Image (cartoon, rainbow, N blue to C red):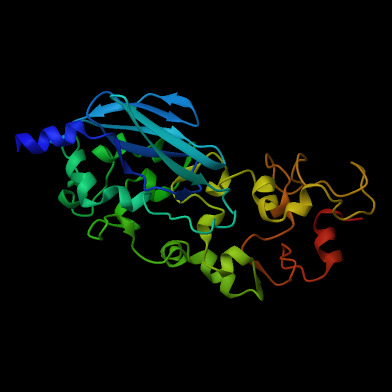
Length: 304
């Protein structure tokens, strides 16, 4: 046992999570490093404060680090040794990077090896001990800060993590069902509306609710990952600069796409969803208000 401990303490630092070349759309992630001595963690050459943890074999440090879009280089230095790890942060609707893994995020943090280390300070069996009850006030919040977001999704606010996540999966806390099936178990109104329409928006048709919505919370209405205009133009890039509906407008030579008040919804910014339904509609252009003709849509707001 003493020889094993000496061997571990002599080893260079090691990233326990995330996995190398991991991929995420989140602006930050939790990093776990095992090292023989004090660890300096740098992300894109910027130093990050880390919290020491307990462990039987070697010291463990962990911290939440911010990521920039694109490639992020994490570097851990301890006792003169250094190790690097690359993480990709993609835009929320960006194309998946070829050859890039997504292991190391979400459920992969809860694999047996890492949970055994975390158990030194945290009660990792709490979900099982609570037998499906609320996780409010549990040690989960020491790492997961979802409840501190401006707009929190209902199940998260109630601590009903296990409504969507499976504590018995391996690794633990995988989503219980495919994403859209999980969402529709509560959002039956959206499911019914989509089923009744002739045309569906691509992400909705593909079952990718989390392309646009953060299932835990955000600072945007409807838990959107970005402002509506920014989110839509992440895919519809041409709409950022081109003129859109070009006849007869008093605020310029084309219809405004953002920055104006919504004419039918007080205290709401006008943006793409004012005219286009982000889920499904009866028109191939996904027009709101059941419109199937352009004139019908326009006269919803413009009576003359």
